[in-house]
Length: 82
Image (cartoon, rainbow, N blue to C red; front, side, top):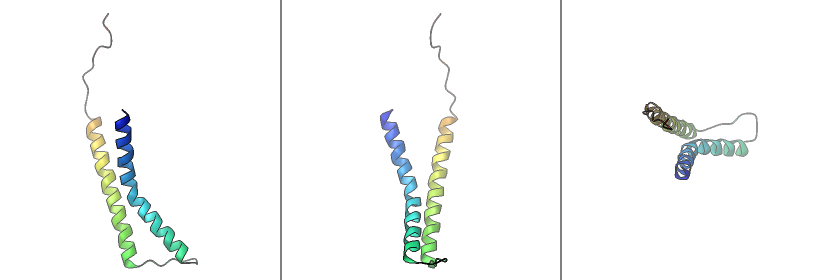
């Protein structure tokens, strides 16, 4: 059970890494550019889009795997004999 929790935490950490990259990029730009408007280069916007796409793909794959596991109908077993 403990191994499963560690594996789930590691998987979640990998999936959230894409969002952390976006957050750090936006935070850097906000710090570097003082003012009401922030300018991003085409490359920066493309990096944000790629990171979001990777996150969406990872989340979709994780969700479809969980749905497949939840779809299994276990055979009931008597818990005690009368």
